[in-house]
Amino acid sequence: MDVDTRNMTPTNLIDKIVVPGDVVLDLTKMENQTIKLGSGLRQDYDCISVMQAGKLRLSKPNKYWVESSQKRYVPSLEDTVLGIVVEHRSDNFLVDIKAPNLAFLPVLAFEGGTRRNIPKFETGTLIYARVVKANGIMNPELSCTDASGKAAEFGQLKNGYMFETSTGLARMLLSSPTCPVLEALGKKISFETAVGFNGRVWVNASSPDDVILVSNAIMRSEFLSGTQQRIMAEKLLQRLEKV
Amino acid sequence: MVGMVIERDSVGEEGDDVVTPGEFLGEATEFIAGKGAYVSPNGRSVRACLTGRRKVTAAPPGSHDNRSTIEIVGHKAHGAVPQPGSIVIARVTKVMARNASADIMCVDSKAVKEKFSGIIRQQDVRATEIDKVDMYQSFRPGDIVRALVLSLGDARAYYLSTAKNELGVVSAQSISGGTMVPISWTEMQCPLTGQIEQRKVAKVD
Image (cartoon, rainbow over all chains, first blue to last red; front, top):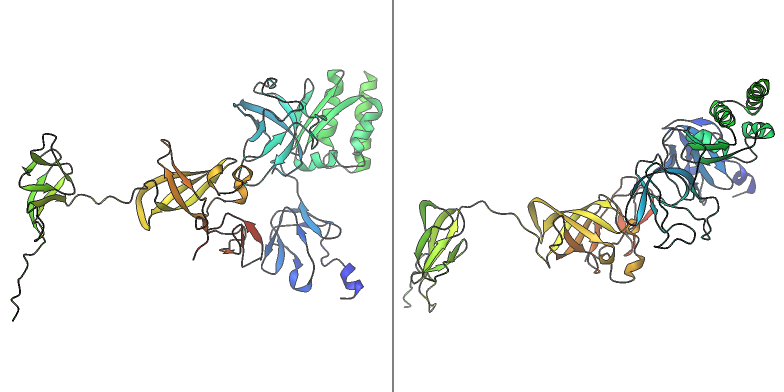
């Protein structure tokens, strides 16, 4: 197999919008290759077809997936999410993360967690946690520590304001380099945010005006380009200065 | 010339009347209690314990006890009921972190007439390394498994075990919908896509 054909991507739909039923790869033309399929794609005998509407992405060398934005969240491993405690059982908390099932957060999954210092989370507590077990069949499992057992930033989020967004906006807010709207707001206001892959955003700032302004700016920025986001943020900030 | 003795037909006579539980059937000196009948506590009478028609079977010739046997027939035939020690075929309905629920469909190759629930606990999935068992890599909902009934369990479900080579997943469908082929005691392969999935596979001869 000469090098040139191997470097050509076998499909011209990368970064384009695809809908369910589209065939994106023909496996008979790609021999001796290993392809990794992410979410939204499925193998149909000899071709790879799309299951979910969205943008087809490729991560070199061989990982394909469909990026889509929706209101509900499908848990996947190592995602950081914002959950709301629904119930306290004997060995885990039941947490709502906008997924088809409630998630379990073991009472010992905290830094230095022992049976004696179980945190007292009431119903309605907002938690920032990490998904440690997610298959489509069982309830997902969360943890409030990072892989090495330290608390990192996980745990209860106090004060502030939480609102829900689509998963696409959450991913945009978490992308690097910093999302333009957050950068523009950060120049004038000091605030902190926690963004969950499950479409929940928490904002905290020193005054309620700032919290409202930042939240509105984020909610409006979903379908704006980078420049539009900066202009929108600056217009909102001017309102603050006028008052 | 050998004289042939025609044996009396061992199919007994059936009465027409319906008997109910507790009804007196005969003296214990004349009859043996068969299926559906019992000897009363004072040891003297044979009574019915099911509803049906009485049937008298003559004692087989040559036995030292020449009392006839009374049994009750014509009652609704009960389906199979799982007993501890019987091999059952069950369909997995739910897989959770520490156990999997299954609906028992056959007991010892006879289909059941009513629904029985079974539970396979994490420690009963296999015989080795029972604390490292991942339920998701052993069963999926919809799998057909062959299991052994350990005990009557609790009020909700029988306790089942697949901790033997010949117990485990017998038939399973892959994510793509094809019926998978076992390739080892932990893996099955889909014939449509070639993908390998993990199960606790039964060794079928």
